[in-house]
Amino acid sequence: MHPIFRNTSRLGAYFALWTILALLLGAWMRLPGDLTWSQSMSVAVPLCLFYAFACLTPWYLCRVFPLGTASISRLVINHLGAAILAAALWIGLARLAGLALDLDPQLAPVIPQLVVVGLLLYLLSVALHYALLAVEASREAALQARDAELRALKSQVNPHFLFNCLNSISALTSADPARARDMCVLLSDFLRKTLGLGERASIPWREELELARTYLEVEQVRFGARLQIEMQVDEACAECQVPPLVLQPLIENAIKHGIATMVDGGTVRLEGRVENGNLAVRVENNFDPEAPAPRRHGLGLRNVRNRLETRFGHAASLRVAADDNRFSAEMVFPCHRGSS
Amino acid sequence: MNQTAKLRAILVDDEELARQILREYLGRAGDVEIVAECANGFEAVKAAGELRPDLLFLDIQMPKLDGFEVLELIDPPVAVIFVTAYDQYAMKAFDAAAVDYLLKPFSTDRLAQALERARALLRDPQPRPLQAAELAAAARPPGQALQRVVVKDGTKVHIIPIAKLDYVEAQDDYIALHSEKKHYLKQQTITSIEQQLDPARFARIHRSYIVNLERIARIEPYTKDSRVAVLQDGSQLPVSRSGYVRLKELLGENV
Image 1 (spheres, one colour):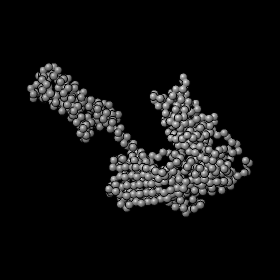
Image 2: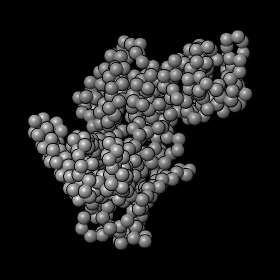
Image 3: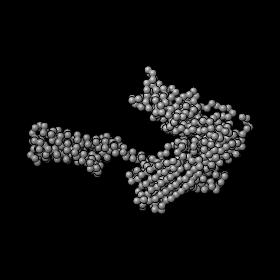
Image 4: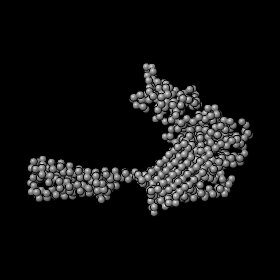
């Protein structure tokens, strides 16, 4: 189906354009002076109505023979052939109308020009269709690029986190081998859980929560008593389907821009509940408003916001607030249960 | 200092485990004495001032002051080995400035190599190719302007957020940073701080002055071809001819 039929306002504009063309054609056919307005219009209107549909057909041919890949000779032969066929039908229809309305002799002088007009209109439509396809292709490419970027962001483990963990393990190896082993297991758990998440469109909230919990346990080894964790998550949330790693950037920020900026550390508090069919998730942490500027500006919040918007549109929100030394981020989005 | 004396070192890292492994490795090296361990930038600046160590092991991301800010505030400068997990821009800057750095996690061999380099540097001090502030600027991710300026005043450390900086005035080898009716002296050239400030918010209006554009109340003619910028607090700063051209570009014709 031609894309113009998917949008009523565009379809309306297209037919409005053809109405104007019909008026112009009618006026032009009167020029030799043998036809009245009503006579010329009664030929021009059906002609243009027919051509309005005929000029949509290049869409199929243009898709079969894309510019750049199809050979020039095949392009020319096919489109020219179609143009001749369309123009032949258009002239045939004109003659038919002329016969039916008893206007054949008056129409005869304009027929040769009418052939040219028919051919040109059809070829113009071919050109416009190629332009339309190019616009669609670039839009598609932009969407795909954004998807790819999101996938990359989703599956990316922060290298800073990874190397700091390995350093902690290195330190524990001699001082506390049992804890070093625990840390290896925790880190492996975390990495295993993130593997393959990029390919999944959604995961149940309990998996996302488990991932955040593992991450926080790993960070707990690094930060020791500086990191306090509080969790209050309703069971009702467990089966809500969420975009994978949607919570992770918020938790990472709470550590990086929060706990890591405090000499004596602080608390990361995670709340989850279902309200009016929405999943509401809140991450709260202490931070030092006078901390040094972060070395890398977090793409985290923007990434979460983009993904929520792409998935849920206006039904989702992400709000952040900072007062004194508490920072909070709250995201709310529809809780769809069941398989993804 | 003689060849056999122990190196006196300060460890600066906010993570206990990160300090622990340095402590363990240095203990094994035998000829390094750890004179202090600090968990944040303020402590580091204070300890370095009081204890005058030979060597500083310095983490970059820390509470209060980051590693670069600590380096800027330590006077006189000491040999520094940066210890960081991953920071591509900082690594590039260290390479350019020939400052040694350890990437976490590191081996004892790599640490020994860094110590060797520090010793060579202490035996035969080289003039530093880059000032601390310039090193910090080189290590900043591209497109990120200076967010705040740190200044040491005796034993006190002042942090001036860029939004509160009214203007900067050159005074010989120093710059005076004017903020909220006070001013702070820092050993840095005006050209070097000019390069670090966001050019959309600050303009060099004179050989000796950089002004925060948001503070300008009006520009008045002074002599035939010079002008003064009057700030919201009433301060008057000279504007040179080329400074006026720059201001017009930034603020539009109606200045």
